[in-house]
Amino acid sequence: MSRSTRSRGGAGGGFIRDVRLSARSVTGRYPFTLPVVRHLVGVERLPLDPAVTFLVGENGTGKSTLVEGLAVAAGFNAEGGSQSFRFATRATESSLGDYLVLRWGIRKPRTGYFLRAESYYNVATEIEYLDKQSSYPLLPAYGGISPHERSHGESFLDLVIHRFGPDGLYVLDEPESALSVRGCLALITRISDLVSQGSQFVIATHSPILLAVPGARILQIDDDGAIEQVHYDHALPVALTRRFLNDPGAVLRQLFDDSGD
Image (cartoon, rainbow, N blue to C red):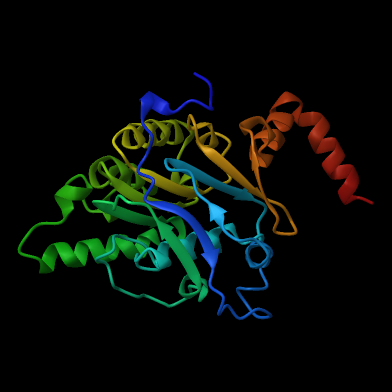
């Protein structure tokens, strides 16, 4: 199947059409000094795919900060979880979410989740707490087992298989960090299924595997923050990984030669 063809014929949820910076944004300080945020200052809006939008770029370009800000602007807890989660372990999020304006479509999501890989431990602790405090058990929505009793990767897949559902808005920050190659392939399948059931995803990733989701829009952020839609084969994680796998020795020799200059 061509990557420009929608998986299983689904058009996605199309809940968020685009994102832009508010006119009241204050430039000259973090997070407005990040390359991608500086780019947003100069563009009218950033369109999102109705189904799946990937953000890729080198470390420090601001893709995770942008995804976090989008999640907060959409009403999610900054550390992750659903829109009903309101805990805070340590406030490390930027203020970007306060300045992002989302243009919503006609349809509204029935459910949603913000999966932030680096703080999912805190979310798992909150899930355990809420399960004990609530008269309605919470763990069945996560596979019936506390995420703390599963491996990191298993708990991620439990989340997307059992908690994610149709007509949902899902914002994911580097979900591949906990997943094996097989786990990434399982995630692709689940994303494809949910897109065909009216869901929308916005994902920051470094994974060349996840980028292969059929029909996904890949937005690449360069070192200066400029955002360009690219084909799968031209996405930086794909091109660099392919180059390395084609000839690891040549890449390593060049790397070591450059480091010795």
